[in-house]
Image 1 (tube, rainbow, N blue to C red):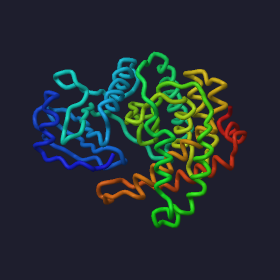
Image 2 (tube, rainbow, N blue to C red; image 1 turned 90 degrees about the vertical axis):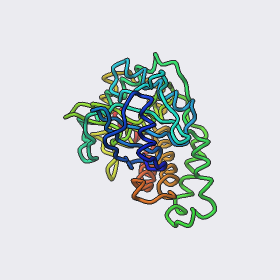
Image 3 (cartoon, rainbow, N blue to C red; image 1 turned 90 degrees about the horizontal axis):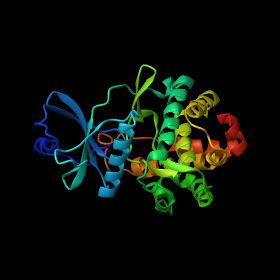
Image 4 (cartoon, helix red, strand yellow; image 1 turned 135 degrees about the horizontal axis):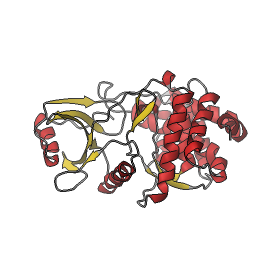
Length: 322
């Protein structure tokens, strides 16, 4: 979530008017992340979250809206997506598509507080999500699949855009990219695709809301598990207690198929590659200032990729207890 699109107070008032809201009493930009422009908006005695979707098609936004609708009706902890008075799930704003969400109560936790018990709770929610996927009929390919990652990495040649650290990492990234061309097939369905620590809100030790479904798609469950383990179970190395707890929580809500187990290591490596490449693209090579973009270090995901390669499949299975 960055600030790519500047909106005047009148433009924000116009954006929320189709949802039956008066002009806002207060607006606060939200600069965290990298994909969209977002604002906290107080209007009509309530607090909302206004997202301006950057570079998204109507099909992209409609898919996410269907995910939100389906999961909300299933009582899965997602923010409530407000519909406009005419029933639309998004409205045009400054030539882009805007969505309005209810404010989700809860707090983010710091990485050091994401210990085994919270990883277990997170695993339970991921297992619930993948179990619910059986009844979800909409489809969307992974928007951050192999072709996009190939483009990001190809764009770093010939010299890593002048950065020695990026240039030094290119052989690793290109080798992993070649391996990703033969990722194993595995059971698939609706996945979150971005289940990072800052996309989960907590009230005490209970998950109160899972945010940011814009990367949701239909993909292997092994990919979603790999993203989650990479995000929640790595500090300066992979933490076996966290990883085993996450998988235990998952298994408490859904069977972990043998085919998914067999694919976990390969898809975790792909997830580490994908986020290394996207962070170089979105943060390291960003064309906007730090006051408008909360910077993230791409090298953290390079380190995960190196660790996964060193672990190998047998070591990764031992880490997860599978």
